[in-house]
Amino acid sequence: MANRMSSGEFIALVAMMFATIAFSIDSMLPALPEIGAQLSPDDINDAQLILTSFVLGMGIGTFFVGPLSDAFGRKPVIYVGSALYILSAAVAWASSSLELLLFARVAQGIGCAAPRVVAMAIIRDLYSGREMARIVSIAMMIFTLVPAVAPMLGAGMIAIAGWRGIFVSFILFSVITVIWLGLRLPESLRSENRRPLRLPLMTAAAREMFAHPTVRVSIFVQSLCLGMLFTMLTMVQPVYDVIHDSADSFPFWFGFVALMAGSASLLNAALVIRVGMRRLVTWALGAQIAITIGVITLNMMPLSANLNFAVFVFWQTSIFFMAGMTMGNLNAIAMEPMGHIAGMAASVIGAFSTVLAAAIAAPIGQMFDGSLYPLTTGILVMSVAGFGLMLHMGRIENRLPA
Image (cartoon, rainbow, N blue to C red):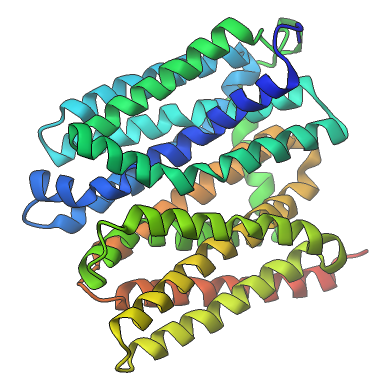
């Protein structure tokens, strides 16, 4: 890399590219009631599809942008993805129907996959070993702060310009990122190191991954853990608004929960060497089952409104914390036997788990009926399924040669 950009500036740019996804999802949460009332008054639950449609598009885009950047270079793919993201945000801003808005959000998710996925490839191009781990760790630490502030930023934009103003902020955010990237960061993948785009290689890699028992189980468990996270995200605002009458304070509570759950990464880093990835994931899912059963039980009791609210905030934190204790480990488990096709494997894992998680979360979100029952039941079923699959993975590992 030409010495135009310092390490600190590079980390800040990468963190901003990582943050595009969290900003695009979490800042929309305070806008759901207004969008539902304006574009889907007959069924305000349909507004939740604004989140899952974006996630669906992101999963689709994740499958393609990595191989495309290997073939055509990192910066051109980010430029095209960002252009699609900006154009889709403009269409969403002008939408007069929920159907058009959802179409724009799918396209926006596809475009958003480019800066997120290709940013990791750029880090691989420029750094290696411990220095690469340091860059990723610092960038991800900055990235974890975005969910804490995004709902507050969204609420601020709504107060100034209505819910459509959030899409203007998406456009400005992406334009700043692209200009910064274009002016300051040279292309990191030299033309002689580029690889042609071959669809048969992509399908062969997918077949190989799903034929491996440990990798296959890990991908499905990762889908379930993401499904729990996305289900909570799609329903959390209605829960605060309808059940707890706390819509005004929702952005602040969401930020508090996100900050508390951010410690999961630190705890995971401290335990994973001693305990192992599979056991940590199994324990985290087992704990989630116990906590969710406890929440279901407490909701059947005549608790005070304040105690009910405290129980939900604790449970919401546990879901975010579980994601922090499982996602990285499951990704590492799936990637470990796939070192010979690492780039393609990362795309397949990210795409499949994200699309499946969105497909799980969307129908559960549509079941919201003014109670916690659909959310708690959905989370419990996914936790039990994931826990069972992790026990199955343990039996698979015991049968494999050392």
